[in-house]
Image 1 (cartoon, one colour):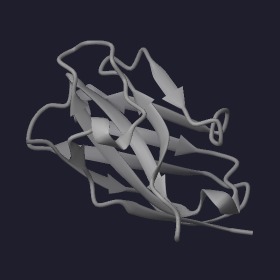
Image 2 (tube, one colour; image 1 turned 60 degrees about the vertical axis):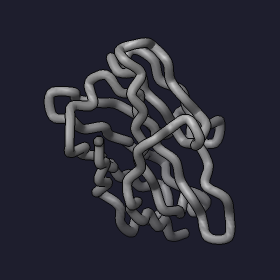
Image 3 (cartoon, rainbow, N blue to C red; image 1 turned 90 degrees about the vertical axis):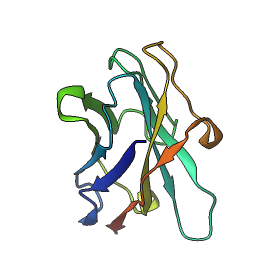
Image 4 (cartoon, rainbow, N blue to C red; image 1 turned 90 degrees about the horizontal axis):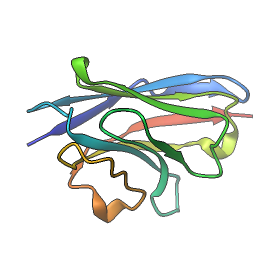
Length: 127
């Protein structure tokens, strides 16, 4: 099994940047599609970004497009989420998710398509 572990969260002022990391243990994620989701207080968890196993395909929620970048380094079993121009509405717990796609080009934007989840890392953006 794959166990994703997020890190890099914290407190940042509006307009600032943070880079989240997701280090997966248990097995290689080289054949896995990876995703980032977030859950703000009192709201449901929502899709943020996803990336194919090769890194060639990436999709973003409209709310973060142009500000966030998802990337991965398979040799390090790690996925990243670079967040820039942060807004108070980006405040949430950010979760990393993994799904074995067997080296297909599939990516997923729905929670139910991912089998493996991390515990989350808190991101707080102050105004």
